[in-house]
Image 1 (cartoon, helix red, strand yellow):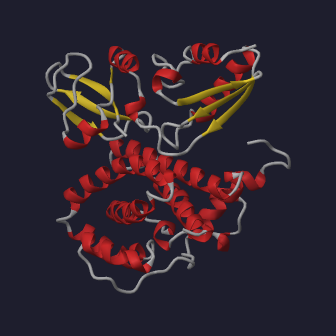
Image 2 (cartoon, rainbow over the protein chains, first blue to last red):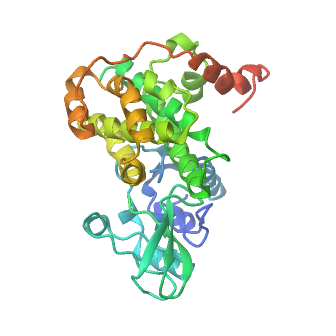
Length: 155
Length: 202
C-alpha cells in the first residue's frame, strides 16, 4: 500500500512545466498529502490564477499517483496560501543557477526595490519590462555584466 | 457580497481581459504587447476562479449566457482604439479594482490571492500614468471615462475612487447598461464555443 512519504518523494520528481529546473514540491504548490487505504488526497495551490500550466500540473500529479498504485484526488485550493515565499531554499538556488533571479522574500520586496543579477550578483540592475514570457516573470537588465535576465516576481 | 455582485466582479475581469487582449500584436511598443497580453491572461484567470465560486463550470458561465445576462460594468465593455484611452481605462479600472478587492480580503480568501497579482497591474498603470498625466489626450480620456469608472463601484466606494483620481463624484454609467459595442464583443468571444459540435470536450 502506498504511503504519504512515497507520494511526496515521487511528486518531488515532477518538474514545473514552464521552468523545469524546479520541481512542484520545491515550488511549494503541494500543500498537503493525505493517504488513506490507497486513496491519495493532495491539496494543490495554483501559483498565478491565469497560468496555463495549471491543468498540466494537475494531470501530472494524478498520473504520478496512479503510477504508484494510488487513487488520486487532487483538490485545487484557490485561497491565499501560495506566495513566492513558499518556494524552498533549494528551489531558489536552482532558479538562480538557471539564470532566473529568484523572488525576494515578500517582506523585503515590499520595502525595498533591490534586485540582484543571477549571473554576477550585482544589484545594479534596471527594470526593462514588468511583464515577461509568463505572468510570473519580469525582464530586468544588469548594467554591471550587461546581461538581460528574467526576474521571478514576488507575489 | 451576494451572487449578483460576485458575478459582476467576475464578468468585469473576463471582459476587461478580453478588451486588453485586443492589443496583442498591435500595441505601440513590444513591451506593451507583452504587458497587455500578460495582464489579460491574469484577468481572465481571475474571472475563471471567481466563476468557479458560483458554479462548477466556469466556461458555461463565461460563454453560455445571453449578452443581456452579463453583469459587467460599462467601463470594461468599451472598445477603445487609441492608446490614451486604453491606458486611462487600465489606470481607472485598477484603482477601482483595488478599492473593491481590498474590501473583500477578509471575507473572500480568493480576493487576497487576486490582489497579489493585481499589484503588478497597478505598478504598470501607475508607470503609464506618470508618463502621460501631463498630456491633454490622457486628461481628456480620463474625464471622458470618469462616469464609467464610477460605475465599476457600488455607491459607498465611489468617494474613495474620487479621492484617488482627483475628480468629483458625479453621474455614473451604471452596471446593467450594455454598451453598443458589447454585442459585437460577445459575438466574437462566444463564437468558438457556439460553433462547437454537441458533446465537444474543452
